[in-house]
Image 1 (cartoon, one colour):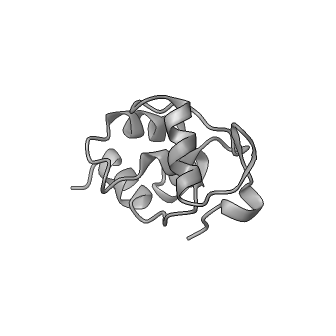
Image 2: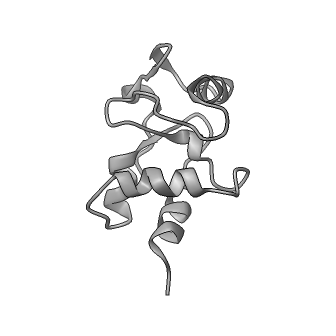
Image 3: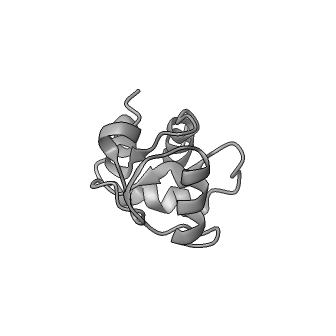
Length: 100
């Protein structure tokens, strides 16, 4: 049986470089009613090279917590992948949102 976190990790693992998904998108695809569960899974992620948790953002494109160094590290990772920003803490979702 697949656990909820495994479902989430599988979905997040498909987000390509240069793109992001929102917690709500991931929750919907994983058939979870509460997007906060996605945040809990991202915080528990131990396979950073396989599960790019830095590519999951808030519903407005806002950067949210990142357990592996904070929001500044998350921003730098996303910028290095070519994700487009509106400002230092907000992703341009009209350009960088991944919709599988």
